[in-house]
Structure formats: C-alpha cells, structure tokens
Length: 102
Length: 449
Image (cartoon, rainbow over all chains, first blue to last red; front, side):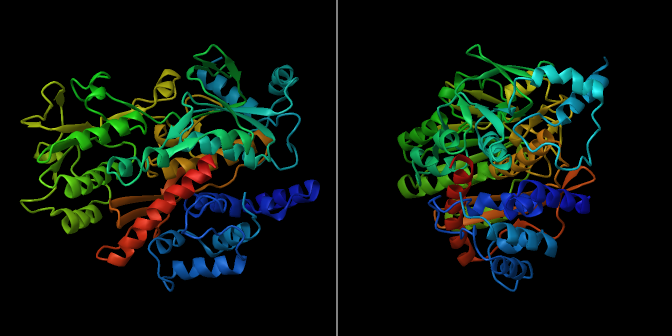
C-alpha cells in the first residue's frame, strides 16, 4: 500500500511538476493535525508554541525524537511525539521544512 | 434497485474521476471499486457542463469550516466549495467559559468568514440547509435555493435531547445552556454579574457522550474564579448525570488548591449521579431543579442537556438509533447515505472525543480523502490528534492529548502516546495556562484565518 502510494506520488510529481511539499502526503497528513496548536501561518497572534512552518527538517526531527524519548522536557510534546514512528517523524519534519506559511 | 445495490451504485459513481479541472487519472486506483461503463455513461450527461467538482459543506463550525478550507488547499483550488451557514459570524464554544468567567470578551471568541471567502475561495452562503436529497445529490436551503453536490460534508454539531422535564426553548431564555457560543454565553455571564453575593450557581452536567467533555468542570472553575474575586460568599453546585468526568484528577487537584474543594468552605461542590446528582426536571419560575430524590434552588442555573447529532443529520437519515451518525473513518463518509460525509460532534468518532480539536483533525482527513476520491486516486492513511486545554484559573492550565490512527478500519489510540498533564507540577500548570490561550488563537487561525 505504502509502496504504491509512493509510486503514485512520484508519478504525479513527474507528470505535473508539483512542489516536493505536495508529494510528501504522509508528512502532510501528520503535519495537518499539528496546525491546530502550532499555527499554519505566522499571523495567528499566538506567541507560543512556536510556529514550526519553514523550520529546518533536521531540527524538527531531532526535537520530536528528543521529546519522544523525554530527553527534552515538555508539558505536552512528549505525550504527542510518542504517537509517531521514526518514519512518521522524518516525513512530518520534511513536510514542515518545505512550507512557507500561508 | 435495493437499498444496498443503490448505495453501491452511488458509491461507484462518486468514486469516478470527475472530468476537467482536476488531475484525475494520474494516480493509481488501489482501494477503489472499478467503475463499470454503465455507471460512467449514466453520469456523463450530468457532468457535461461542470468544469470542476463541487463540494457543499453544511455547518460553519470547527469541522465544517476546516473541511471547506482544506478541500480548497488539498485540491490546489481545483474543487469548488460552498459553505452553508446561517450565522454571519461564528462564536466558538471553546473559549466561551473564559468569557463566562470574565477573562475574555465576546469579541475574542467571534470569528468572521471573510478570509474563508477572500483568501481561500470558498463560497459562503448564509442560509440554513433544510433538506438533503441523496439521490439527486442536492441540498435545499430555507431561502429556496438548491445546491447540487458531488460530495456533501455535514458538520451540524449538536442538538439537545428532551431529558430534563420543563427545559423548553422558552426556558432557555431564563436558564441558559450556554452550550452553543453566542447570546447564551452572554446571558449566563450577565446573570452571574447580576447575582447577589452569597448566591448559589447550579450547573447541571450532561450524560455521555456530549460536546466538550472537560467543558463542564472548566466552566465550574471559571465561575468559581469569578465568584472568589467578586462574590466570595457564593458557590457553584455541579449536579452531574455521570459518576466521573474528564481530567477529573487534575481538576480536583486544582479545585483543592484554589477553591477549597473538599472543605466546608469549598466554592465548588460536585454531586455525581450515584449521589442523586442527575437533574430530572426544572421549575423555571421557582428557579429549582429536581433530581430523583431531591431538589435544589439556585440564584443562577445553567442546564447542559443530554445531546444528539444536529437536526439536519436526523432529518436526512444520517443518524442511527444512538442519535449520532455512523461513518467510515477512512473518509468520514456516512455508512447510511452515500456521498455524504459527517464530521465533528455529530459523528460517531469514539475513541476520538467530541471536541473542537478532534473536529478540526477529522475535517482534514475527510478533506484529503474527498479530494482523492474526486481525483480518482488511492485513499491516504489517516492520522488524528486531539489536544484539549482547560483553565482552572487564569494561571492554572491543564491538558489532555492523544494521537489516533486507523486499525482494522476503526479509529484507535496509538499505544503509549497521549494522556493528561503531570500532577503536582506548578511550573507546568503556569505554562499550560498560557499555552491554552495560544492553542485557541492558533486553532481558530487554522480554521477561520
């Protein structure tokens, strides 16, 4: 199922020339659920939690893994990060890094 | 045609790639029923004039507005979306307890649909949907217009059941429920302001399942906070139709710390169902509520009735015997009516809660897979998050969170994830109090911005 989806996404990219952010559908699925707290853009008016749109992928990936392992203290991110595999985290990190806000 | 055959036929038609304006045909078709030629022929004339697929969304709350916006985003504006919502602006239920407690004003929880229209190209129709014709795939509006849809999203929120004798529509003007944001929120706030010191505020909390499980104890906290400051001889009495409630340990920890809970001078008293807490009837003139064996008199009374899916859902055959709407959680399509998707509080979504965050998360999964269906592509594996913050005081916040995935076609909690805030963690409570407000600003921006 996953293989077919990647193949479909690659074919789509090839045919239509869509941006890489559109291709990473797993990252988009997970990332969309994060917008509820983290903000899909920079002008929501909220100070924290940080707007992670456009942050470097490696930074997001490292942060999420540290939250998941409780090596970085948090109120809530540790509880949420425990819901994701390494692959999920890599996908969502890549997704956020390619967004420029809306 | 039998019901089942008819339904399968409609499903197949719905799954067919829509001609023109979309990227249909590029992806594979795994997970879809092959479309027989007969079905293709039968829909060809209907689609002849349509350049783009059209999705109609009924209900402009957390679920419906999110779905409308994200169908536009996920289709790169390739799908036309019409949102049907009677109100000119939306007052959120989340945050309304903060208004009742005096921490925020109504303006803070009121949102315009203008960005949805101007930034995202959603057509917003301020009218009320009165009926759905699933065979013709049309929605009829109170104003007389009829909208044709390829896919329909129904996000009507909740309606009240008649579980409390005497609690009529007229009674709500004197004894507010305040479980829809808006004039009812203002009314309850005004009654608290007008109440003399030494008064009792009665809250009747509903049986499960209901919108916003931590809402009643958060409301009690906010009212107690207001009373403590301005009317310290007063108290809140919660009469509950349940024996436990959401984030109970954390609420009681906070109530003990701030409101003397458990002492003779507690500003909050909670009576569970097992101690005769369930309210059965209300006497509006006498400002009394009756339980099975007793009665209580209040200076302000807030009744939160038992709930069911919003009226349009029941009128359209979308509800089952439970009063809520069964759906396929991969697409949120109704299991009773083809091409109609139900999201938010009205849907049967357990273990996802009936919360604004869950509705927002469900809407995105629904939007993504509606676009995939319209484009004739394979469906995406879903993922959901729920995060609910509650305030006990302005500086004391608590949360519950969970990550959900689909297991054997059903929503399931991801093992090891989620849970409630750590107890006995004052710095965490202060941080989460500020996160609660930021949560509100970010999620409403995600929906209405």
